[in-house]
Each structure stands twice: as C-alpha cells, then as structure tokens.
Length: 456
Image (cartoon, rainbow, N blue to C red; front, side, top):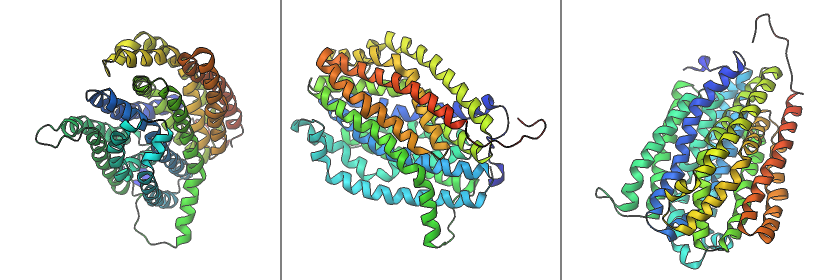
C-alpha cells in the first residue's frame, strides 16, 4: 500500500468503514490483552505471593502504557487530520518525528522509574517481603521500556492511515510470541534459565521489540512515512507540538485511571495479599472482557480525525450514534455473561479460595456498568480525533478523581469491600451519561462541506 493508496475514511458507508476498522483491531487488542492474561496465569503457577507482587505492578505498568496511549492518540489524531486533507508531506514529517519524540520520552521515564521502584511501591502499600519480587519484574520492564511503548505509537499511526488490518496482524504475532517465550523464561524450559517474574517481563520486552520493528518497517516501506531528510530543529519542534497538543492531555487522561486505581489498590491491600491477588485477577479478566470497547476507541479517533479534516460532520455524528447503541447493547450482554462465569474464570488463575472470592465479587458488581464505561472510552477517543483533548481529560478526572475515589472511601466505610467495587460501577454510569451528551453536542458543531451528487 503506497502513500497514494491510504484508506480514506471520509467516503463509503459509515457502518461498513467502522466494521472494517474494528474487526481487525479487535483481534489486535485481544492479542494485547493476552499479554496480561497469559502472564497472570503463568505467574499464578509460581504462587500467591508472586501473583500479589505482579498485581502491585499493574497500576504502574498501566501508567507507563498510558503515556504510550497518549502519544499514540496524539500521533494518530495529527496524522488522520492531515490524511483527511491528503497532505502526504505533513503526514511523513509527523510520523517520523512522533517516533523520535517517543524515544526521548521513554529514556526519561526509564531512568526515573528505575530509581523510584522501592519508594513508589511502598507508597502503594506493598509489604517489604514483596519488594524483591516487584523489583525482579520492574527492572526488565524499565530496561526495555522503549520496546514496550513504541508498538502503541506505531499501531496508532497505522490506524490513522486506515490500515487497521496490518496493525492487528502485528499484534497477534506479538501475542503468540509472548505465549511461547513466557514459559521458557519463567520456568526455565528447553535449556533457558529459570527467571520467574523477571522472565515474564523479558518475554514481553522481546515480543514487543519484534512488533515495533515490524511496524516501523511497514510505515517506512509500505506507506513511505519514515524520512531521513534533515530539517531545521524548528520543523521537528512543530511536529512534536502537533503530536503533544493531543498527546499530552491524552496521556494525562489515561494516566489518571491507573493512578486512581493505585489508590484503590492501597484500599484493597488493607485486606491482605489474597485480596490484592483477587483484584489483580479480576482486573485482567475485565480488560479481556472489554476488548471490543478498546478496539472501538482505538478506531473512532482516526475515523473522526479524517472526517474532521474532510469536513464531514454528518459521518462523525452517524458513527457516534452507531457506537453509542452498540456499547449499551454489548455492555448488557457482558454483564450477564461475566457475572455468571465469574467464579470459574477466577479459578483459572488461582487456587486460593480467598483470591477467587474477591475476584468474583468484583465481577458480579462492576460489569453492570460496562456499557457506560465503553461510551466513556469512545467519547474520549472522539474528542482526541477532533483535536480537542481537554474535554476527554475533564471526563476522566471527573470519573476517577471527583466521583470514583470519594465514593470508594464512602462505600468502604458503609459496605466494606463491596462498597469499593460498587463505587466504580456508579462512577461509570454517572459520568458515561454526561460524556455521551458532551461528545454529541461538540461533534454537532464540526464543519460540514456541501456534498457532491451521489457522494456518501
């Protein structure tokens, strides 16, 4: 696919374009989720302490990945809007400079993260006995951080070009590699050293590094979006500013969620290591359950961005209507399926009765709000596509900081652990309703050009 064969999202039936983007992205996101599920399952075989240690890393890992998601959103939004205007030179410059920006940010985060492992996890409530195991997992993570973050950015660039299929295939290959490498390094099979928690981290680094290499090759060879042309520093700064205009608020938006979850982890930690292990199991099952919503939020931004660049407000509004209705219907189905299968699903990851009980409790309460949570994800991504990231930040701050955390403290005081989980469900429903209205009203003010006869 050459530069001239980018997939235009400003033409053709809206529902068809959404399906074409979403289906391969579902498989890609599904594959990403298997990283967490597979790692959790293998680490669970090492013991409850190792599983608890890994569960403590989840908010930090998600915070780091949120930075990548923000950079991906920034690059995707800028590239999609340029693609809607059919400006290949600008797309090429933005794509190349997004990669260099990712490398610079990753270097800073890697050093800062390595130097703060112990104090940060003590702050999250980790017991001293768990800190060596946490370090064992996080040191490889920080060492390979560039390869952890870069695939997210390149996948966003591919979706901005309308090529969700290649992004999905690369992620599937990455997940398969992780499944193969995980047991080799965790348990020391086939002559490999037994690295246990460190092995889980190194397996992820290796798999993601190969994914990043493949994505960069596709961007350069297939789309001609990587340039070695020397340009003035001013041009690079302009590109970085274009990416960061959406990227910084989007990163902040995504960081808010794991940071708030860190507070919840600290609350649940007061119930002991078994409770933390159960929460870790439940949140990984949740991520797996929400794969379609993650996929839809990954493609709605590029769709909105290209149609904003092409002045097609009608297509943006029609896409939002389709997505809202789907989220509500699919969310209701998920609530039933996940609730009924909560206990057997949790038992796949742990034999501890206490850990299974906590995971099941979470999965009986929170899924009733999954439809609203999906709408929140979609609206945030749509705002990024519109080049207006601040409303998305406001929505996330409201949901996690203004509503969720205070309700969690109140819920714990009144109803113990069930109150903590019910607070999350309530925050999704309350903020989801407001987000749906805000996204629609803002999109209604997007530009609309006059259509040629027969144009769809």
